[in-house]
Length: 229
Image (spheres, rainbow, N blue to C red):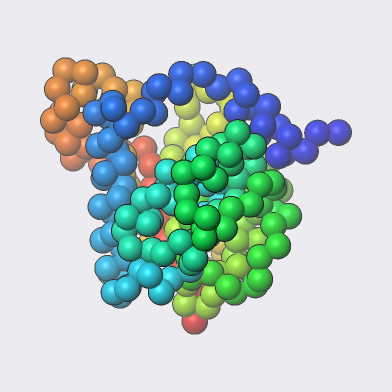
């Protein structure tokens, strides 16, 4: 009998059009920069003045692009770690990231991480690829165990379903709160809807910002779920 991680591998194997996520595309680099600015504002609001002191683990780190962003922000390799389910993406991440940054290959639920050892557990567009509610909760419970009191889960994912892709589903904020029911959540809407962004930026890159001021056009949430100190 297949497990949810096996199903995720099969779903990713069906995906095409990797160029759709290239940073050479104006819709992509603007959405990435928008998210970066939002995260940096969040870190400042939380009172973090020295990111080098924080321990962060990314669940579903892919080819390592997010961890590279965190290094640029001021995190240090020895305090960063990541886990990735897909072997090809893991290999790309291992080749791109410093040796001092700990990477693991496999199912994050089975990962051996000391309880209350991480200031931040980051997860980006992972839960929208998990279609099994029970597995979602198991992963959320593991992530919550890893977070230190006073730390939190940093979440980025889309909130609405994609009618053209049955392999994913949106994760509304009420579901995020249910997954981490013991935490206190703050959130903001970010990221212009990708179909809108692709069409608009083909006309002119500046139209990303023009349409992004309309809140209903933003399809993703950046959320911080804090663990009581």
